[in-house]
Length: 195
Image (cartoon, rainbow, N blue to C red; front, side, top):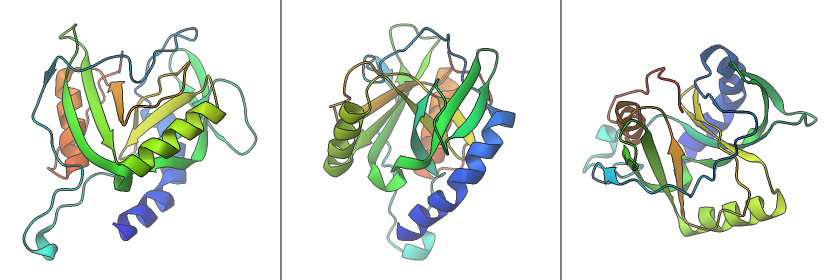
């Protein structure tokens, strides 16, 4: 896992540069949905975030996952990402959560079956760090990047204190593809815009 963290840290700046070209998040400028407000009503079975096998050489590597602090206001040294059609998002290039912080991932839908939800379960230490960060940095956004694609960047108005993050990522198929990619099952999220 140390090598995947190094890889994630090395790829994070590149991923942020590439986000302008492959941005998939569509949000309204005044909308700040809470990342913990929705609970998947229909979900696929939980998939371990880092699947294990009996032989280390056969272990699958999941797609790099990064959760980044983001804002609609400029910050020094933060990457600028054009979010079509709504404007600009400023993203801290240092990931606050990565694959190593995940203990599980689920895909499903909420009350509206048209909207896919991706739930990321955090280990206790990651949940504690996230609660402190969202307390210290109120009214920002949490940008979810899987591979080289930003899938969502919802805002939060209160500290995120649960050990689970839930993101709207477009369709249920897109949520399932993202969950499989994170778990190392070969699928990658498509370019369906998140709603």
